[in-house]
Image (cartoon, rainbow, N blue to C red; front, side, top):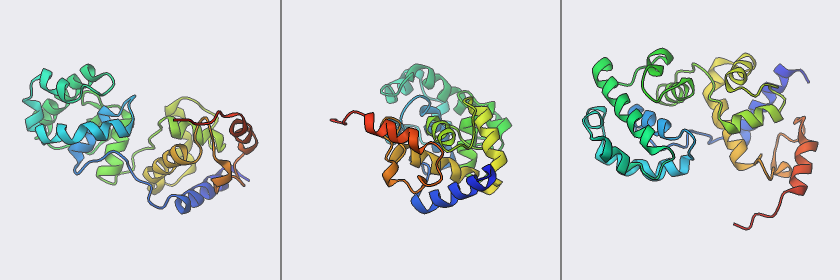
Length: 223
């Protein structure tokens, strides 16, 4: 199967397997999503979603957060990985939003990337999910692993993987594709115990034999 045909078939099957695939960072507006995504770096969405309700209650707007004391922000997110650095990023981000964007979250990768704590990945998350603007494909650990297993890329660098995937999938599919591959990695194609027997991609997956061996060797999950 040609790679382009494989990509389209993967997308079709994933849409059927995970019709409700979505961003799992809880938010109610672009600002909350921006904050949550900054916090999610090297941290699970589950942990971020535990912390953000109280954080958003204390600092519901860029204006409120921009005026906050650093120690108060640190206290609010202290259970998050690298909370001290992220607290500085959140304050700097909110202050720049107020100073340069009248408190509004910008809608371009370039402007978002100028905010403290924001890179291309975070910008893609915010633009795709808050504004339905598909500027790129979010490549996290799940997308990196599953896209390689599915034969959609041979690269390991996230930026190169993103470029490979952008060539294979239409622009309007980019945000959905990230969610679908993340759902696949979290729910079925789990790193240490892939559940190939439950996966609707098994017939077209070039790594199914390798994954099957991992599945047999994986230790029992006693947690």
